[in-house]
Image (cartoon, rainbow, N blue to C red; front, side):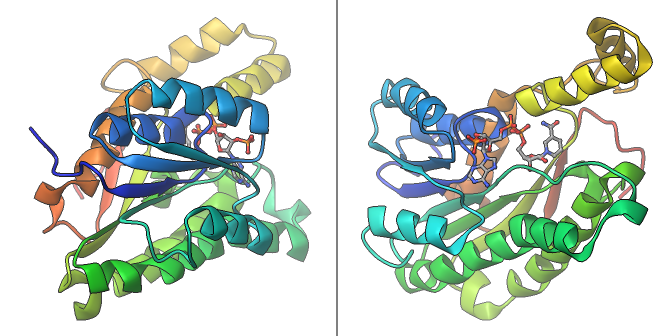
Length: 264
Ligand code: NAP
């Protein structure tokens, strides 16, 4: 299926590896030019070299997307205050796990800044230009924890649910939905990325079990019997960005191999 995206411009946050890279890769494969963002320049350049093999224009911005200065750097590369993107995939690292009793105001502000206010700032800077041009796709990478909260991920549960509520309202405005601008959230379950590897390593150190044992136990709890891979996540993202997906907006799409056990 041709997704109707050739020649469009996308911004993908947190894209030097993991889920963000998967999204950038699937979009580039569909002929989309992509601006990729991450803090570490070396990994970002390596990711860009890989993506350029797919034949589209790939620009890099080595910056912290959760800061105003980082976002200014993105807009300057894009040739204006965010008005030139057809597609925006919002993504950055998730907040650390912990016990809410130990979190101070600053911990909360940091999580809300990164996982709620940054996507909102990116949406604010881009959707009106998209609406004026009659095409726009925003995909926010959130987490399955929005639907099935995990106690130690309280910072993530809280901040991302705030974003989800905001999106539920703004996506349904006529100015956006009526001008072919959609906003959806993509909720990963467990995906095989560096982030997951880091949590497995920490669990192995804490429990004395091997990383392989921990992976095995976790995969057995997923009906699909495996972790997801960033490529299939990226392909779902590309479909949500497609011309064909113009009637899907304000949704929370779970990609978790069946791990979430609810009917809705
Ligand atoms: P990952 O493999 O660790 O990759 C994260 C990417 O984001 C890297 O390119 C990283 O590069 C970049 N990044 C992090 N903080 C950034 C910032 N402030 N500004 C710009 N770039 C930033 O993580 P992932 O597994 O792909 O996870 C992506 C998102 O999905 C996270 O929010 C995570 O919490 C969420 N999630 C993941 C899973 C999973 O199973 N993998 C499950 C649920 C939710 P630099 O460090 O160089 O900046």
